[in-house]
Length: 169
Image (tube, rainbow, N blue to C red; front, side, top):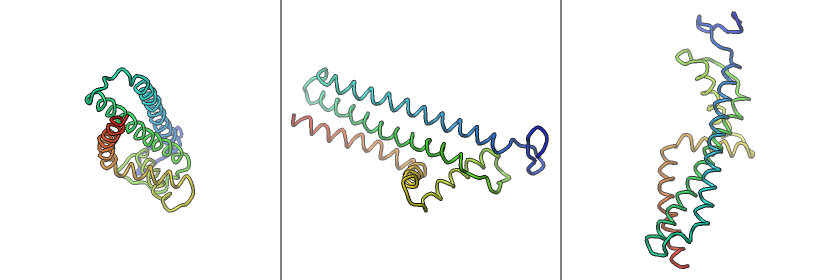
């Protein structure tokens, strides 16, 4: 332990691990709370759209427009929910992650973040409810391009599905 609560690594004084942990926890919690706000906004927009269904013209274009908007909101809601779970899981894992080893080419905070993500990867080997959430979250984080592609594909496919359902009404 060096001066003013700093520890010395590779000849440099750095902040303590707990200071970095608190900063990352604040960041992860902020991200989760922001996504929660997005989720509430998406829910309100979906309810508003459904309640104003009569305002759309009962033509083919009007029904398709309504269906596409509804499917976009539902798909965005699912996507935002999964991202909220991602940041929530990181908020939980940062508290229980131990910093063992130090990569000298990165900052202490970056090392702690990588260890947290590694902890999420290790949860894949465990069984139980938290491990299932971590598996889902890790998959989404690792395959973000895949999830974005699925997001866009879902909007189109759900829009077509809702269009077919609305034409029957």
